[in-house]
Image (cartoon, rainbow, N blue to C red; front, side, top):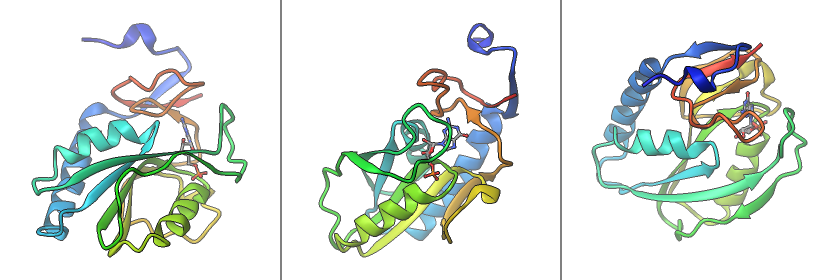
Length: 178
Ligand code: 5GP
C-alpha cells in the first residue's frame, strides 16, 4: 500500500521503512542480550515514541514490561523552549527496576536531561536511554544516550511517529521537510 497521497511535495525521504526496521532489529537484539534476566521496563515517551516502542519491543526476545510517560516542550513549535512539563506520569513503580526510556528523537537533549533527573530520583537499578534519531549538532547538553538508531543532520524530520503540526505520524518512513 502506498502512502503517496499523504506525502507532500516538499518532503524528501531520509530513512526508509526497511532501514528503520533493520536498525531496530539490531538494537532489540543488543537490549535482549544486555538485559537478559533483568525484566526491564521500556518506557515510551508520548506521543512520538509510541511507534518506536511498539516496533522495538517486538525485536526484544526477553520478558519485559511497557509503560508510557508524556512530557511537553515544543507544543507545535519547531524549537525547544526548554520549559518541560509532565503531562502524564509513569504508572509503574520503577524503584529497583531496570528502565529503558524510548524516544523518537533527541534534538537539544533537554527532554532527556529532564527525564533523567526526574526518574533517577525514583531509584531505578539502571536507567538507560534509547532514541531512534539523534541530531548531534543540536545537542545543548552533555548526553549519554545508550542506544541510537541514526545520527542525522539538523533538519526538521517527520514520519514514523514524528509530527508535522500533529499530522504525518503515520508515515512508515522518515522524511526531511525542505
Ligand atoms: P529536545 O528536548 O531533545 O530538544 O527535543 C525532543 C523532542 O522534540 C522530541 O521528542 C520531538 O517531540 C521534538 N523534536 C525535535 N526535533 C524534531 C524534528 O526534527 N521533528 C519532529 N517532528 N519533532 C522533533
